[in-house]
Length: 405
Image (cartoon, rainbow, N blue to C red; front, side, top):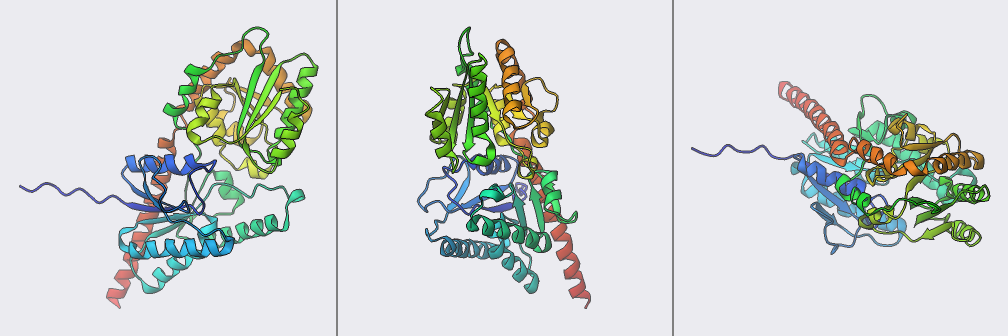
C-alpha cells in the first residue's frame, strides 16, 4: 500500500524592495511569513539585503542585493526579481508586492495574460500612505507622493487583486470591490513582548512615570508636542520622563529640545526589533500622540499592539486608528486632541492613576491576545486563497472557450 500523497503547499513570493533587516517595520514581514509557513504556505521573502545575509528566523529567504543608485538600483533589483519569478513561474502561486514594485511586476502579469498561460496571482499590498506633511514636502517627497498615487491607480486597474492594512485604507485608495481580496492589520509577537512584564519595575512614591515611544522620529508624529506637554506637566507638579527611540528627520529638533528639559526627555538611537521588549520594560506607559489626519486614520498602529503585549497602558490621541482597536477599554489614557492642552490633560489622568498602572498593564496584556501575527497572517492567507481560486476559475473558463473554439 502506498502512502497517500500530501497536497502541495501553495507558494508565495513576497517582494520587499529595501533591506529588511534593521527596518523599523521588519516584524510585519518576518512574523507574517513565519506564521503563514505554520499555516500551510511556502513563503519566500525576496529583499534587497546583501546576498550573503543570513535568514532571519525560520523563513525562506532570497536577499538579492541592490545597487546604491536609486533608479538604477530599483531597475537592477527588479530585473533579478523578474528572473526569479520567470524561472519559477509554474511553481509560484502568488507574487505579493507593494507600490515600488508595481511598474516592474505588473508587466509580467500582462505577459502571462497575453500568452494565456497558467501564472501566479499578482497581488498588490498596501500598508501605509505617504507620511510627509505637504507643508514640509520637498520636490522629491512630492514626486514620491505622485508616484504612490499613480501606482495605486495602476494596481486598482491591473493587479489580479489587492490587500490592504484596513478597510479605511481601501476606501481612501478607492480599491474596487472586485479587486479587494481582504485586509490584514498589524499585530504583536506575544511571547517575545510579554517578557517585558516580568522585567518592569513600576513607579514608587515620589518616582517619575516613564513614557516611551519607539519608531520613526518624524515631525508628523507630534513627538515634540508630547515633549512640550511633559515640560508643562512638570511645571504643574507632575513628574514624567519621556524616552523617544528611533531615527528620522525630526530627531534633531527632539535632541535640541531635550537639551533644555533637564532629563525629562531622552532621545536614543534605534534598537533592533529583538531589543524592543527590553527597552519597553524600562518604561511604564507607551505613547501614540499622533494628530487626527488621514495618513494616521487609515493605519493599524503596530506600536499600540507592542505596548499592550509588553503589559503597558497606552497614552493615545482619540483618533479612529486607535479607537477602532481599543475603544472603551480601561488601559488607555485618551488625549482628546493632539494639542498641548489635550496632551497635558491626558498626562494629568496618568498622574492621578499612577498607582493603577500595573493593573491597567495587565488588562492591556490580556487584550493583546486578540492581535497576534497568527491571526493577522490567517486573514492574509484567506484573502490570497480566495484570489487563487478566483484566478483558477477565470483561467479554467478561458481554457474551455479555447477548446470549444
